[in-house]
Length: 203
Image (tube, rainbow, N blue to C red; front, side, top):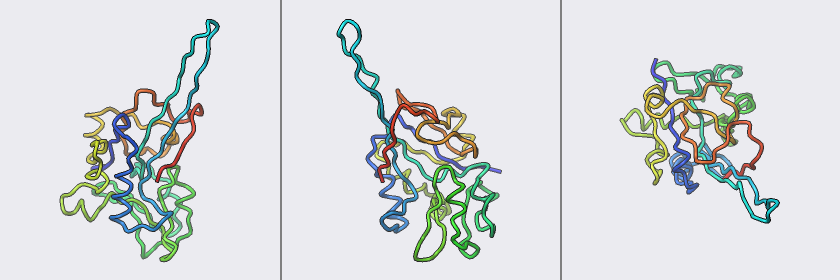
């Protein structure tokens, strides 16, 4: 089975949020519901040594994040109606709205907070990698919108051969669900679980 996923070049991301805005526009999402977010992680300080010289270890970087189409998705495991499922042909994690009861268990289980409740419909929703665009041979809208070309989408094994296997970077959680992502870290990027910085969610 092919597993589709994202490559995210954190070293190129400027935090412009074009990816998040394009996703929100394409999916007609209201304020407060986002399928893609941009997180800033920053920390460090200036220190004066015994000789009076000032040094610093300040760092800051951005990471674009959405549903990671996990190989072992927690949302699928906890869904009581089997509305969440992993599509066989490409590994995408999708939601069948006809089966969804909007209970929110998937949102609670997902370490990335990907599932979002559509309060009007009473259904859970999330990034589906723009399956309608993929069917036409197009890329997800977030990929096409990125001005820095910091996002790529495709067969995750091809992306791993090209860019490596790194999938753990703060402020994202430790990759317990086998996320289908590859990350190129920024120069001062910290590993998942790091507490030296603070997360700022830029939507």
